[in-house]
Amino acid sequence: MQLFPCPFCGPRDETEFQFATEAGKTRPEPAAEVSAERWTKYLYLKDNPKGPTREVWLHVTCGEFFLMERDTVSHAVAGSQALGGDPR
Image (cartoon, rainbow, N blue to C red; front, side, top):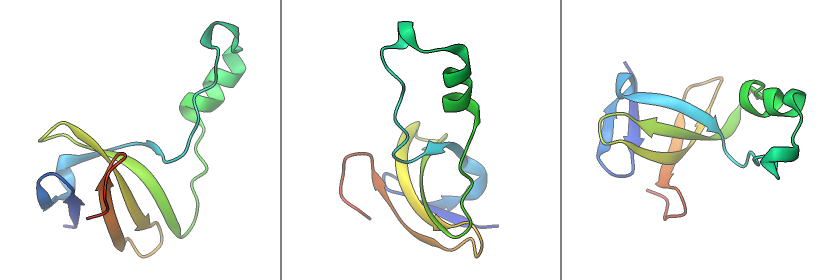
């Protein structure tokens, strides 16, 4: 079991969280002019970096999205913060 730090609820079991997306991913706009191929890449293709990364996660229990910094190799979590908020 691993504990993830929710910036709203504190450390909680990893089973309460769901990966949302990579941090900094920009939605293609204007939506009406975006090709199906570009939408597919935006929605389904991930960079999947090896090592330190920043990701958006959902804490299912409280329903809040937040930014988490973690290492995909060691699974060490460097921290988390509310979207647009202060690090915790």
